[in-house]
Length: 399
Image 1 (tube, helix red, strand yellow):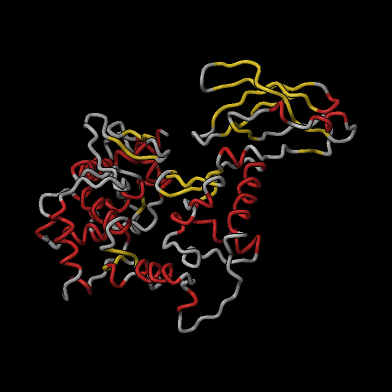
Image 2 (cartoon, rainbow, N blue to C red):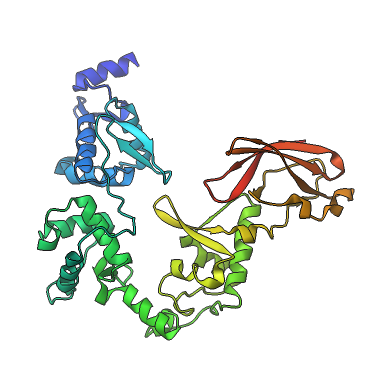
């Protein structure tokens, strides 16, 4: 440590933030500091505060790259390294927000961030009229923005369009999000690039037209070859219920929305097409009346996840084990009625079934569960809510 400190001083590093990765030997043997420095981190975070953008690690990395000197553009600035650099700074703090995502804060500044994923529209109607007119014009309809919502918003703000003047970059990001998800002014390209384009050229328009015709997007392709049979209203809800209960039994209380189609392909050898079932978005399909007792779609972090409903959890079959005397973690709904279980399996000699009921409460967050375990006696454990999902996880369960 003393040697490293001496090397750092020699290299001109005087702030408290430094470690071995900051010091790199030149070919001649001398030392130089390696970007980013603490002052760069603080300035980048401060600029995001000015823009009303929460400094998530991914957003901070983008901002650092924008501000870096051309000869110091980072090639290996991973989230882990960036988090480590921020943790070492006395001027920055690492915080976890309500979405369980990590962001970098400035303790001496008030947080006034825009929730760019909020579906709430707080902007004047005239803004949307002007935006629709611009992106429907010959000039605006051919525009294409690469790099995702943040980079697209920066490019859009740089155009100095009259209807966006006076808005912070955070607000522009929110406007872009609403234009994609709510207003049908922008959308994602139907090509594999994922670029943001006017709605008239987007995959969203194609999917909306397919939903009206009750056909899959693939079936409209000139090179269409249907590889898998399509899921139907008879099979789609049933299969999703089975998948969610299987996840619950394995200790997982949700499935990322982005994984749902892949699971249908791999487990059921079918294609879940939201457009063939009359919906333009998968998230909209899963909120259809026919899924209401199966699942709920909620935001988890900055993406969507699919959770089982209480009605589905009440059909949960408790786990069995062919190893009497063992116990493992499992999940139950908060209002699960153990008295309704068939307890005959408790008398089986080689197989056991967990059952029992909550017999004491320790505040609202923890419940003590006492269960009988076949002929092996009793077990106790602590059951606690898992991210407000409506299920409890039994932990520290021992015989």
